[in-house]
Image (tube, rainbow, N blue to C red):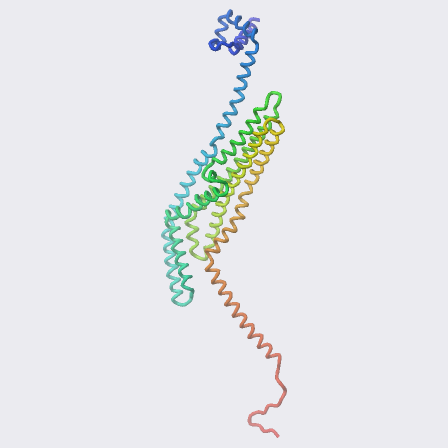
Length: 403
């Protein structure tokens, strides 16, 4: 009985610490009330006279506890993608720079020897008359040799004209033209904006939840799942494109050197195709994020203007979830789309590289066709002559007389 009474006294004293209106009295602990039983009785009487204070205090503590996760979640989603991308991009840039310098110095000697042998053998062929080509074709061939040797053996030139063009300039400029100046492949801020907008809507929906109304909490949880999945899928495709483009560009000196000879030129064309593939993929990701930001912002503005009814709340949550789910599915299809587009770009680049070869092949084919046509016409004339035959008459032999 004594134990039960002590527990009851402790519970009453704990409640009184939050019930008392006097700020100076709120600092009194449970132990102080147990030592001063008369003060405990007076405080209990005061709470009985004003019973609403305890409920208000408890409700205030409850509302503060509910708001705490919301603020913590919003603070986490401010720059999670941007900070991660900055830390992730530095090793890629360092890897590309180091690999290009190493490969350029490695192939410098063998490539120069190969170029020397190529020029010597080609000069002998021209002197013997085995090769005859216009002067412009010879100038184009010499310029191609100079460009290949410069890009394959000079790492600074490669960094400026290849890495700077494909890794930085093209994705950034095309992405800015499509989605706006604030969106580019070097910043994770667009993904943070998309995630923050979705979390803001989920928080507004969650504020309408209660102990007897858990439907808004469930809707907010479902919306958060779609927001997280859509944002992370698009960000993962961006990282995949950056890593792939970095690895392909790092191998660039070797494949550019292979473009010097006709037998190994298909390797250079395949390398160009992969570079175009990843560049287009980066641009597509930025364009998709810009489209999703515009769409989600429109739904958020509409929801903010009509947030008074539960029906509008559900419609806005379902619409945003559907849009973000669709964006996640489209993100998975972006590599296929980029591959299809890059095929056309690579074939165009290969035409520019191999156009002299195609012209020579066309001329040779035309000459062969003309020769074959002339031979066929001579053969047909011989067949016609053999079918006609001659007239029957007596021919006098030499040294004979006729009567």
